[in-house]
Image (cartoon, rainbow, N blue to C red; front, side, top):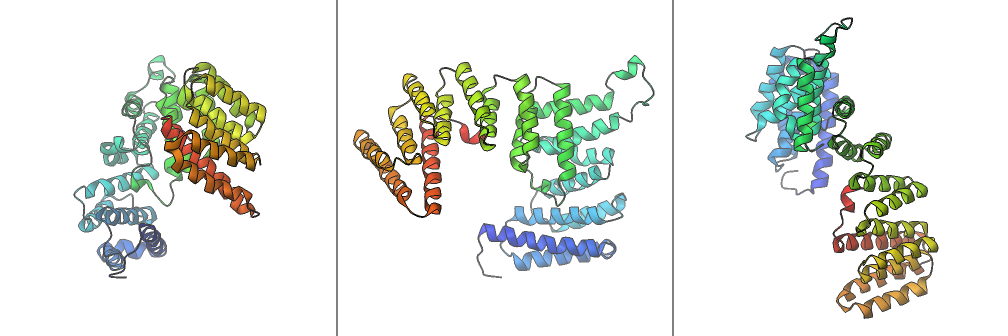
Length: 401
């Protein structure tokens, strides 16, 4: 492969294949790997450099971190700190970036967390709590787990009903994440072969955070972001139910709820959220815009004309309304009317002639006998109008879907 240029997508795929090969080898030869770590890491580096001579330093180091986690996860010696130090030493020998210790410390901390060694996991993870919400919630979870050992379960005195030192540290850690608005799923070392244990810990602490600090909206916000990453619709619904109780007028959560209902083809639920948004934010054009989009999907003329009339009365730019007229006609099979509207759009708004031309090409596919072409045309039309209108109206719809 030397001298061969590969796309980023191909490199990523081939790196994953190489990682799977080494993971399988580690599982089959755990004792052999443990007994001669320098030789094993030498093989890893040789394979990596021969297969990917121009790999970026960041990807190079991340690969070593992922292999190191697998070594620790498979080994029977991962509770031995002398062994852990050997793994760290061998991994760091070959890493290239100046912050090489960060990745390996996170990897070691996650392994210690997985086996329940919370005290030592904190030592490795706490300096990186703010890098990612999943690391921060992991540290908070370690403190919380230790707090359960502070008092005997049969001790019910009033004094011991108050939070102990470890629980207070847990609360402080997770509240700080909310204060700094920590991101989630941004640290590559969290992309493990078995991320389930870390996700369970994340959700445990998010719901504890909501119990401890019921007025803190960040817990729901970051949770929703994680559901989008993991495609966890069940947890998404649970969080939206909480948001509807505690933050029933929060614009961001209402928008997310609208798209949730839309994705689940619940027209009644989506309509209910739209009506609430329009009542609560009568001077905001976005709820009306969402209503126009909704009516394109329902294809009901009475619904469309109701939102169109509202859009006109609230001062939505007329060229935006024209675009929805075009889309509504085409999606309802009124192809001739749709083409006439495109021609009218071009004459009425000369600066947008470029867009009218594009719409004409998309509309021509609505006359196709090929259903696949028609479906693609529908998607292209809706995506095009969506992107154009969100830019023109300065909306934030994309970030909340």
